[in-house]
Length: 137
Image 1 (cartoon, rainbow, N blue to C red):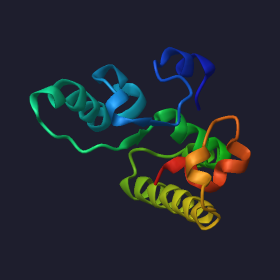
Image 2: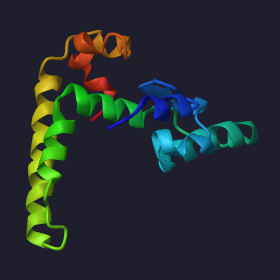
Image 3: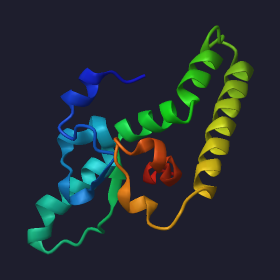
Image 4: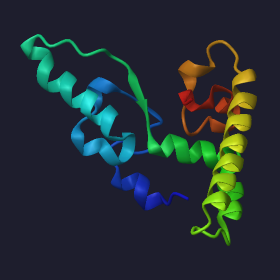
């Protein structure tokens, strides 16, 4: 799903979670428009006294890593093979199946959470830290 060039092209690299205050509009491809906008507001408006709630964004890279690690990337790709995109019912069924697979895997990982895991997520430790669900969901 993701190739090495995509990750290297991003200013955020292989980061999985980024505090809002570090984000700018140039990060839209990595964290989405709302998260990038929050980061931009924090950096541009804090000096003017405008208060913006803090927080963090999970990156698109984190999502792709989760999909790969959870075995969902292959399952989704296989499900999409031969899908008739003109058939609204087939599209809805496919969406439902993908959604259920994603939700089931996410819940499975959340149940396995242990205290302290969420603070120590990194790409290198992913096989162990899948228990944190990459701080997504």
